[in-house]
Amino acid sequence: MTSRIPNQRAILIPALLAGVIGLSCTSTDSQRLPVYPVRGEVFYQGKPAMGAQVLLVPANDSDPQSPRPHGQVGQDGAFVLSTYQAGDGAPPGVYVVTIDWQRHPPGRGGGGTSLLPPKYSKPNESPLRVTVTTEPNQLLPVQIP
Image (cartoon, rainbow, N blue to C red):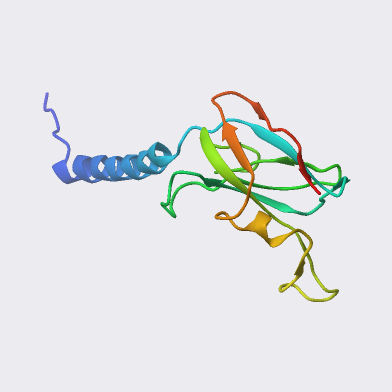
């Protein structure tokens, strides 16, 4: 009875490819911070700020690669934050909250007029701060006068 020894290249190439693919998948996932659900509400002059964009900027992190959780305010004033995929939440930490809400002229895509005082859209001026914890988070409603 003869035994066949497989070609070393036939074994080595698939093994190397599996290792490279495995490393590339894990390196992306390992760079992701754990996230926790975050919900909130935004009102301007007592009415829902429908369409406003909410962005959380890490308060003590100047790295532009740090995650920036974001969400859009709905008809009822509510928003859900997303970091890596829709509605997944935000990493724990302290954040400056910025809110950008613009009215766009009909038929034009960009260059709208801000509906909120400018300080709310600037991380270095926004008075809004939140802390995201390692559990589901319901933020206090933001009431902009």
